[in-house]
Image (tube, rainbow, N blue to C red; front, side, top):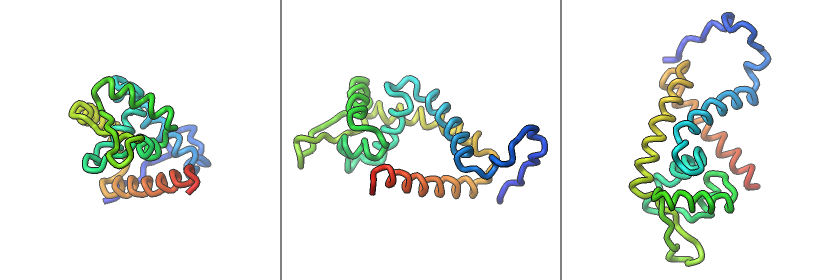
Length: 162
């Protein structure tokens, strides 16, 4: 069931022109989520970048990505990705193994420690997401996430020049 709209008259100096501005809305959401992700992942080398890498690796156990594929999935420069993976591998969060089809590339694989770290960070960020989306009902949350994912994929294709 959709939640009731809030009474916005109590928001004081609210600028109504911003209410329908996508740049403003995304900035507010992004700032809140970045802060939560940074706090939750502060013990990982690379912080929230590491969190994104772990999230991208979690469902890939049967078909691990190469470093280059992983960099594209999370939107990181391949040089930055190499340094980040070096740090994460040193911490035992992931391992890199030669690609049997192309020995010049390496597959990136999450370790048990990496899965444990991901679960910890994911739990903390999920709590922040719940607080952020408190105004929405469950169905609206699902729809909101689905719509954002679709737009994010479009944006990602645009940055790659597809």
